[in-house]
Length: 96
Image (cartoon, rainbow, N blue to C red; front, side, top):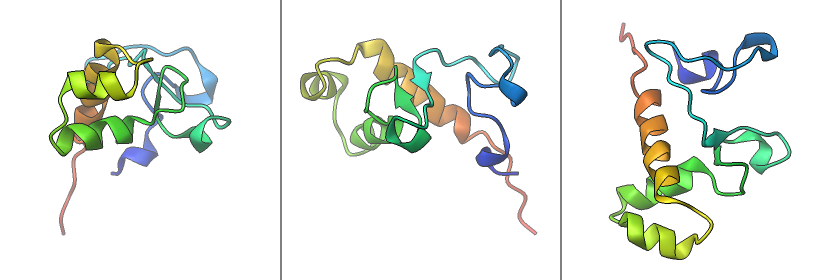
């Protein structure tokens, strides 16, 4: 099963209110809006995709360096972006 087959965190099928369960935490700082970055996962409705933040961490940037480059971000935004990325990678992949 791939991550796109599940509703994004904070979204439920048929527009129901988000709810936490044991394997799908609510990511309250991660937003999805078709009018912002074509619906990509972003930080708090800003035009800052989660993928950009995670990529910067992967390439060695520190939280402080990211915060300097994106003054509207908060430390908790970066932390939750990493937690969201980690949650996405928990998907079970079955190799034939």
